[in-house]
Length: 316
Image 1 (cartoon, rainbow, N blue to C red):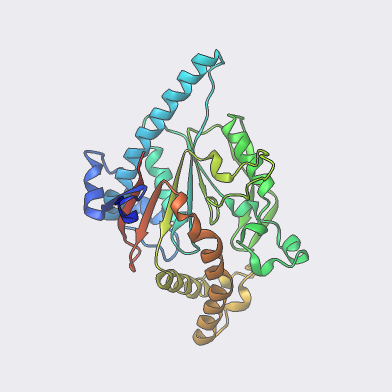
Image 2: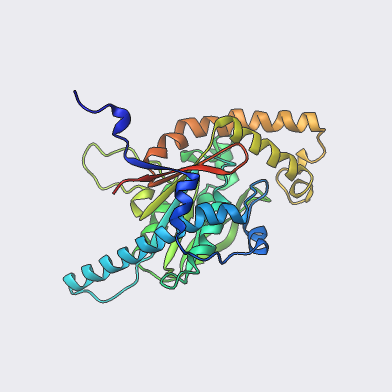
């Protein structure tokens, strides 16, 4: 008889303690003050978490980037091409409220401290959402964050230009305050050593062409990908807790798209957050985001306190 399927996993799995040992002698270069600037609302992260999880990860990625840079130079020599610079692109996927933004910012800070990758830039796919006006016209406001709510062609063009080593490639800017793309505003990516791309559906494949046409996926441009995983019940709780915190802060800004929720009672606000989660975010998670977990090179699994409890690294 053959091996049980459970023994044929494409991942090598580590406990938190096992993974932490892979830090080796990598120094911790972030301070508490740095972390306070990097973490997102309701996504606590400690220096111990950085030392145990993100320092080993940054060490591994620094090795991967160096190897890829060497391979690229060897290919350039073989082709007789002029020396250029191609960014190493890292994709970060996962559910709403999983903590992708904090992970992306902490990784950016750590990776920029390695000598061969001083220039690390970060882009979120929120900027490639269709505007609220377009979504309303198409009847997709209740599907915001689903694959069909993005300008996929623009995102592919952006990644293609970055990967081609072009200078000053622009990406649209999104405001979480007004819950919309900001007209005329953009962020510029100018030939970084590493580009981190964070978004809900960045690992989702396109439908394959029956004619064999070349239809690129967003993840085709990634050199490495990370999925932040957590149980549904924890994700929902974190989402509601964040909603309640925002109700007393950002929602009170007159410019906020969500200002109508600022004056709700606690009970009404919780009911509203639960409705948004169950109607929009949970279906998106199960229909589109969670099925892409097995496409990631690394899966970070969180426990109920946001603490990463286990790591799964795809075997080479």
